[in-house]
Length: 247
Image (cartoon, rainbow, N blue to C red; front, side, top):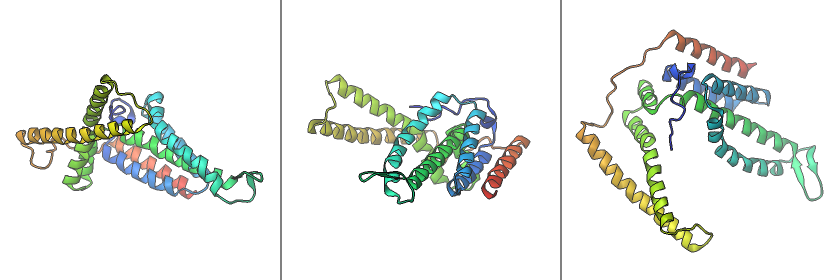
């Protein structure tokens, strides 16, 4: 499980100042969520798609990250068209009524969700966790909160590896998942064992950090400097977002 799979690269977005990317991302999300009608969300979707190509990311990896969210969005397509009352209905029979307005709303949710996810990958995913944590400190986010964010982001991969080890050990002992009580009990034991391993690993990590002089925060050695390219991208990107929203 590699959370920083998109952080390696030499595209324009990879070399931008993370502070500019965070501000651009926040503004993009606010205006994308607040966009009305169909045209504006669709344009924001195209912009986020353009950011993915600008970052020179592998489309297969991007689609793999989008797939779980879109599987969840299927429930919106299943429920919303039947819940909305509209006139005319897209399909109307004595036993089935599919609202045209419901389909429209499900489409808007899908467009906005995918636009925000692709913007997240292209803008935030192209910076590693160290750069994001450093940028958060520049925005005066409390140091303790930044430290918690950094440790959580850093060690969620470690916890996933521990889970895979526990799962492989169970499979090696003949565990076969089935829809029965014994399977649910086994998964309960796996979760409990993972919590114990997580606690033990956290103690080891904390002692190692103390041995290296950790005093509640990570010292920042290299600071960011705004470059003309950062100002150029930030200005024109934000201007485009504003103009699309108000026109």
